[in-house]
Length: 158
Image (cartoon, rainbow, N blue to C red):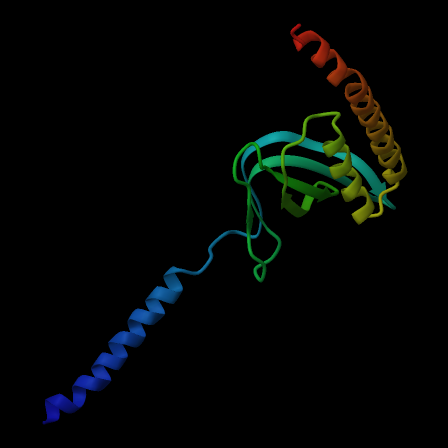
């Protein structure tokens, strides 16, 4: 009987030890800050807010703001991390669709960062987005007017 009275506490102790080991082995060990596997585009300064200089870069890697936040990881080169830096130090990151240089999507992405951090260059980026939208609308308008009629004439069979 003495041996059977020690069995249940021993099982509880073993289960507790196993549970503690499982919890400790599954905790997140991602370091705080930016961990870069590959740099796609280096840091480009996009504006200032007072004395602070802000820049953006696109990288493959992981960003973790603090110990109490979850890490953000890029998937591949088509969905990299857009890293926002303040005076050269990364302060924020988000996974974005890779935009072509000089495209509307790229300009809108930079404009959103400039507006979020109230940069002095946000008016410049707003004008760039407006002009790219106007160019895109003009191209779509010409395509819709001339595209279908040319297509119908060239494929029409008598």
